[in-house]
Length: 85
Ligand SMILES: [Zn+2]
Image (cartoon, rainbow, N blue to C red):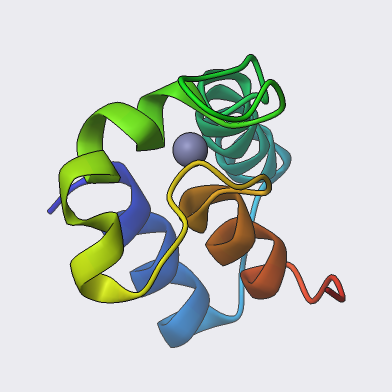
């Protein structure tokens, strides 16, 4: 069981979350968001370069614009946090 699964298991069974758990969760999200910054790419100066590398060749096939920002990773995090579009 990884750290996230442990935090979820304790929360689900006991309704308990510690300050250390919250700090770890925030740090994990901040680490992901720090990687997915709009730093520019081939056709858009405001895109996420990581998602361009990972999704660029499939972007058209999926009908997604991988170079757009917020990228799919940031959008997923924002959605999970309950942030609007
Ligand atoms: Zn990204």
